Length: 483
Image 1 (spheres, rainbow, N blue to C red):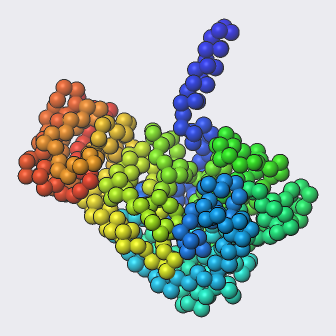
Image 2: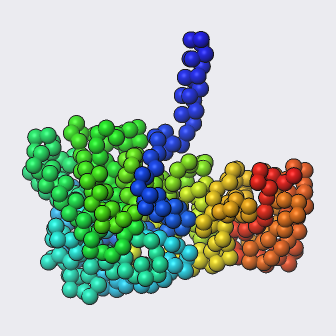
Image 3: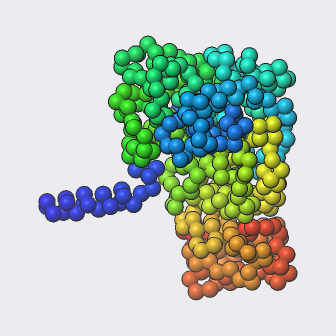
């Protein structure tokens, strides 16, 4: 009996070790029926736009991380001493003047690309607010900002409005830490890492001041900026100590002995009172206030058994770069298909320029993704994963009633025409089913061993209905296999 128990324990340990990091912690489905309904709606949208934009855009650096003194090689300050850099950085408020800012072309381009929801950065870790908060003057409408008198100076309100007018679900990115606020980083002490730089147990009144500051800012966003569907909270090191796990430890900073708990339950209660059904995404803090999980710059290897979203950049950086390296449209389309086939959503980030525009390369990528989506979107929206999600170059999705399957063939790097035949073994059509190439029409298919062979006419193979990936639709037996 002891030997049997030991074997069971070892098997459990092995299974746990093989799980994706996000699967090692239990996911808690929201209890509020309105939140559950909104979560399902969000999952059906599949494709969204994220934007990182702020003072750091002027420097073309890795967001506001240059203010953090954890890793000099990561935050390139050009050899500038830390204190000098910090003074220079915070002084950028006097220079940030995006006179070409107009969010309407952004919203139209995102809609034409097939995107359905937005997550816009209202405040990053540097504490610079891209909205007209009353809690601080370190904001886009502050007295030192040359942009304060612009008719669209309240940037977040303008962005939310433009995208809402295009039918987007609206998400507010908000960083929980604030490296400018004196109740988070007191100027009386050094700032050794990303965490608050004083012991909150010794100075509880200072920490209460900071908690109220964050609460009040989020309350403004929830009451003065129209309908908001998602509160996307970043800065996962600001959390109760009881929630610290291996993932947090892997970030490699010195975790303080005191807690950085800002009372998310209190914030969520207020936010949902003002925005019923609001999705709260307290990133990496697994529990009731992480309504969906957010693998960053990566796609899981398998289907995850809970709501999730890959957030990923269009270039090599979240914010604007003066030497951007744009991913190819093919790479972006393939990532979208890969994510959706595994049951996730794809949140693609664009970093606006200091002038308040998208670069032409960003518009070009969005246009080309939109051309692909016009042909293939029914395999993306409202779809569900079906095991196995991928076979070779072919990814699979299925529609809501789980009858129609979409087999999406991902073109190889230099492949611009369809092959004459495509073999699929793990999923295949009902005997009487037709196979439809989206954007063209029906093509022939036949049984081949344990699978199916799709036969592409020569004229279609040479002139496919779109670029980068091609979708075949057919019906299957309920078991997923033809009989």
